[in-house]
Amino acid sequence: MKTILTGDRPTGRLHLGHYFGSLENRVKMQYDYDTYILIADVQALTDNFNNPEKVRQNVKELALDYLAAGIDPKQAHIYIQSLIPEVAELTVYFSNLVTVPRLYRNPTTKYEIQQKQAVFGKEGEGITYGFLGYPVSQTADIACVNSNIVPVGDDQLPHIEQAREILRKFNSIYGETFNIPEPCLSSTPRIKGLDGNEKMSKSLNNCIYLSDDEETISKKVMSAVTDPNKIRKDDPANPDVCMVYYYHKLIRNPNISTVCSECKNGERGCVYCKRELVRALMEFLRPIQERRKYYEDKPELVEEILKEGTEATKKKAEEVMKRVRENMKLDYFE
Image 1: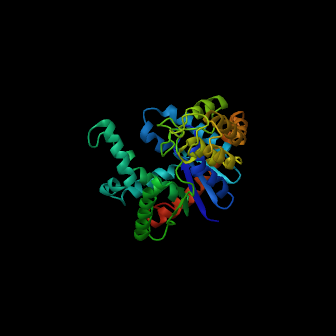
Image 2: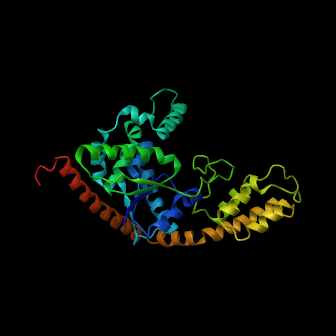
Image 3: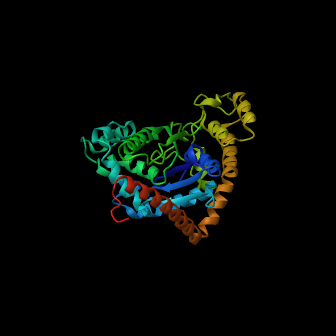
């Protein structure tokens, strides 16, 4: 059975963008692969090093969202990155195999640096060693479980290519040690926000979270962008420019053909359509939120799941590191 590594930084609750972009696929894949799901708390500290309590709380929230979405702890190992010291050790070794200019050329890193410069105003300001070395740490995560496949979004492809370069270089120097992982792109395009933005994002405040209650979802949906040319209730409209219709399609509303035809023919008002979307969203989220409530009421069970997942990952990482140290001639007393 091939191995998959995937995961997220604990930066807050997960939303529909996460669900359709990655979680839905992870739930399907966990039955066919040896699956490791990473809660990357160390990497979350690159942006939150001065607020560790926030990261700690978000670790719990992320674990709950994973379980709520359908990750089965009997099929997948959910683990906490900071509790796998082998990741830190490999990060040090891998850091010798990549140059600083190469890290700066990483397109995703370059874009994020530009964003930081827009805030700090000076070249290099706000760029920490940990931030620049993020792809190296990510390579160590992949290598610690010797993953064959890494499901990612398209924005993470440069990181995976960098990981492949580092692992190929390691193998060429020290002998065949690691698999060279293949990225697995989601078939679902990036999910748009309620405001029509091309990306659903926490920072843009345009998300529907998996744990949102009906009142919250109703307020958000009522503010969603619709066809600006539809002025009156009975005006015909273009559903393809309406975010309400977009979300009807996204959650696979069985009534979607009626929604489309009534919208085009001016037989459906926007308020009615939004209210229908709220009902459809709550029905879609119901099993997810029921599972979340189950685990929220059993914090000791969630802790046990994280412990077991972390222990299983630690065991795998120890096996990998034994081979690494042998190949690097660092097995002095073995």
